[in-house]
Amino acid sequence: MIRFVAKRLALMPLLLWGIVTIAFLLSHAVADNPLASIVGERNLGNPDVVRAATERWGLDKSLPEQYFVYIANLLQGDMGTSFRTKAPVGADLAVRLPATLELAAVALVFAIVIGTLLGVLAARMRGKLVDGVVRVLALLGSSLPVFWVGLIFLFLFYATLGVAAGPGRLSARVIPPPDATGFYTVDALLAGDWPLFVDAFQHLLMPALIMSLALLGTVIRIVRSQMLEEQGSDYARTARAKGMTRGQVLNRHVLRNAITPVITIVGVSVGLLIMGAVLIETIFSWNGIGTYAVESSRALDFPAITGVCLVGGCIFLVANLITDIAYAVVDPRVRLS
Amino acid sequence: MTLAAAPDAASPTAGPPPPGTEVPLRGRFRRLLTPSILAGAAVVAAWILVIAFAGVLAPYDPYAVAGPRLSPPTGEFLLGTDTLGRDVLSRVLHGARLSLPIALATISIAALVGSVVGAVAGFYGGIVDAVLMRLADITMAFPSILLAMAVAAALGPGLTNSFVAIVVVWWPIYARLIRGQILSIKEREYVTSARAIGMSRLRTLRKHVLPHALTPVLVSATMDLGMIIILVASLSFLGLGALPPSPEWGAMITEGSANFYQWWIAAGPGLAMVTIVLAVNFLGDSLRDVLDVRTRVR
Image 1 (cartoon, rainbow over the protein chains, first blue to last red):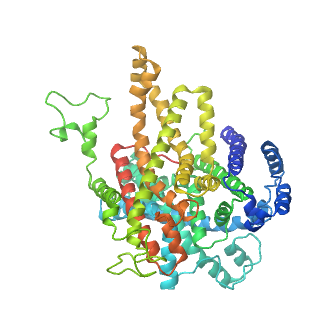
Image 2 (cartoon, each protein chain N blue to C red; image 1 turned 30 degrees about the horizontal axis):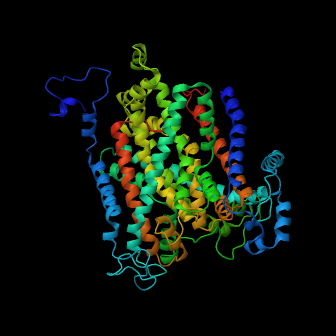
Image 3 (tube, each protein chain N blue to C red; image 1 turned 60 degrees about the vertical axis):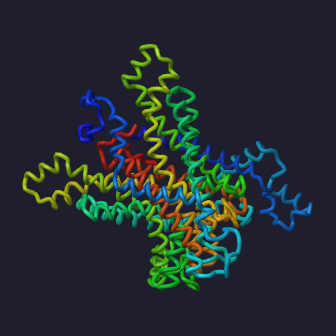
């Protein structure tokens, strides 16, 4: 176990270095001139401005030179300066990361809770109409383009029916809570401001629900097939033979074993959650990593894009490692090697 | 499901298959005729017809002004008109010619590249394997949308570039899949036997290893096709793929999001995407159940 973790941790810098290198090379294979996003289209004709900016951002140095400067800075925790916001990428990301994490965490909880309930339901009603409906629902979840669903839901539930909160993390003219964790719901509670908490939570609901759709199908499928598999096992039959009712066996024995693999979802889902974040944050004007990535890509702001990729990759790798460890802890039969 | 259940599947001389052999192909095809697969296939067939006859089916020119601007759905314009007064239905039908072939090409090339890399890595092993698989690991450590966005941003917007971006992101999935298959098949007895009776390495790989390793790739490519259709549209939606005036579905939805209260502009292309993706996913899902390929976790 410890050897496994050590091996994975040792591999991580290599993977992160690979990510940085690929992102760096991509940024220098750009077809368009990044100077346009630094000084603005209008100033491109002004040689003085262009020369100053080229020197300022080190674009006059050779490619290997730029690369080594970038890596050296990175090792000191400096991810460079954004072309677009002119602020350090690290600071930009630190401000936006909590918004995305808050959204993703709520989405993950939704996916696991709703998915487990539906999966158990489908397994108990196997072959019946309910089972079929849940199966279609699971497929629908992974078949819907989230950005489109976001748009339609906003139109229906916010603009037309007025039952849901609109885009953004808070209602207009509501002042954010004093910054402690960056999670508005948590900060509002820390400040003891109940109405603010309710407002922040209401704004989380719809985007998180839509974000969870993509994961729902996977959770349902895993829970359903695990329930069916465990139901047919020897211990379940023995428990029945000893006189437990079918419901007791399912709840006390089968369900506990069946939901263990749901843990693996957390690792698998990070990629999907990041994808959801990019698209849903764009639709819901959510000021997180996703909108930052989109705006940076549109502006060819490569220090920012590289930073997002690096942070995204870190989250992805750490989440997968934690998943593997958690799985081994929960299920002692799993041997990590 | 056995051969006996299918009366005409076996010739009179053929008995039950000896233990340990694969289910004959004909028996497998028979199992494919389930209602869900047929339903999925029907929708896919309908879209193929749309792609073939979009010019005939579309009531108006997808690029030309056909009526008043921002008209809600009427008898004349079934899905309404957009900001310039172009017919949304005509644009959706023509958009199928972009979105679907691009997605199909993307998945095919990604599966091909991945299979070749994975087969080479798995069969030759050693340093080749190590280098190729580390490259796959690095690519997969990128959250896929971020890498696709970075590649698309570097190449500049356009559908061809989103195709390249997604292939770059997607090949390692198949490389890993086929490598795993090959590693396990390589040790089977019939492969050893083939080598023992003097078959060359390459011929063994081609004749005995690859055919068995390909089924999971095909199934998983089918299952991923829906995802790819959405990914292509997502890149366009973010402004990194197809650009206006292209009737690509994602680009049309972007236009719809700019005209939030004219819901029909985004509704048409979105619904089109949902029907085809749902049908494809239904096909893939059923195919996996029937062929009993183990669910891969990624």
